[in-house]
Image (cartoon, rainbow, N blue to C red; front, side):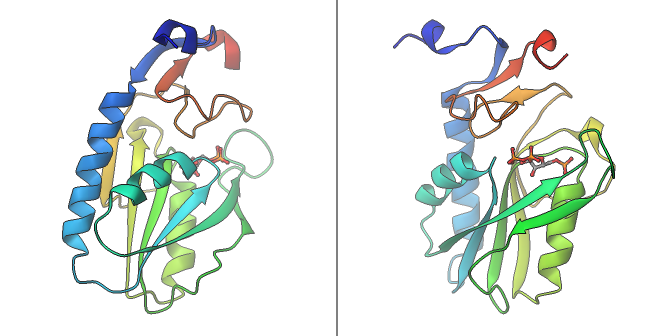
Length: 185
Ligand code: PRP
C-alpha cells in the first residue's frame, strides 16, 4: 500500500511519520530501560484509549522486566459541563503500592488528565511514580505537570493517528497527522 493510499482526505499533512515516531520510541525505551535497570516491579500503566499503540511499541522495546496495565479516564475538558473535571472509568487491576509505576500517555493537552492521575496514584504510595508521554502541547497547558520522558512537543493543532482519535476515528493510522480544520470545525 502506498503512503498516498493511506492518507485519508481528512488529513491536512503528516506531522510525524512512522520512522520518526519509531526512532523516538526506541530512544525513550533505551532511556527508561537504563533508568530502571535493576528495579524490580516496574508497572507500565497505559491511559486508554489513546495510549494503547504507544504503550505496545514502547513496552516491546524495553529491556527491563515489567508488567502492563491500563486505566481509563474520561475528561470533560473539551467543551461542556465541568471543564477540567476528570472521572475514573476503569481502574488499574494491579496494585501499585510499593511498585515502580510509569504512566504512559499519548498526549498532554491542558494537563488535567495527567495531573488527576498522578495525584490519584501518589495517594496509593508507589515506590516511584513517573510519566512517559508521546506528545505535549505546551500552548494548551492549564495545569503544570511533570513529564519525565517526552516524545515530542507539538503545536496546538488537532492530531490523529498512532492511538489518537477524532470522534473515535483515525486511531490506527500508523503516523500522526494534522486533521483538516473543516473536519473539527
Ligand atoms: C486524551 C489523551 C489524554 C487527555 C489529555 O484523551 O489521551 O488522556 O486527552 O488531555 P488533557 O491534558 O487536556 O487532560 P481523550 O479524553 O481524548 O480520550 P481517549 O484517550 O480515549 O481518546
